[in-house]
Length: 212
Image 1 (cartoon, rainbow, N blue to C red):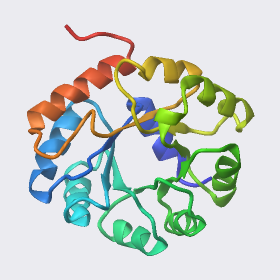
Image 2 (image 1 turned 45 degrees about the horizontal axis):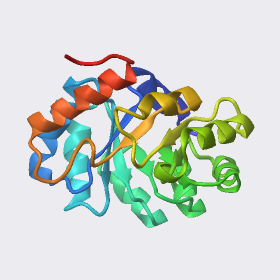
Image 3 (image 1 turned 90 degrees about the vertical axis):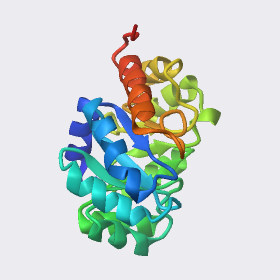
């Protein structure tokens, strides 16, 4: 696996990945500031957002303490574009050997999407830094526990899809290392202050506490 340690360190600081689907470049800095101030260290802008590379460039420059990159990376050619924009994180909904291979070549953290043990082991063999378990709505905590039992102990598993402050603890107990948080954290039109409030709620859930 490649680039595991920066990702592992970011997860240790905050086991949450912000998925900012629909983010616009003009709001990127304010939303990023709200997340970083709340303790988040992993930020993903899906490539089907408006001008995503511009947003990634803004976030990467403004918040070097965070691991910033792209989601919904479907083609190997897109990996180099993200790298050129300053991104260090590649996330995909699927496992594409070419995407993982290009991320490995460029020294980027890469989380391909997997759903089965077959996909998981193939992604790890290709050099994935960790596994995005997607869609998590279809894999309850018991499924995560079963998959975790056969994966190498050091594998980082990040469920994505349908994760809320209410179910996060159950997934964590089943062996999840982190979580991708999308529409429950950010939706187009939300203010940076609203994102900050949601971010703190998830941080409290991750810490096993409840905000007043």
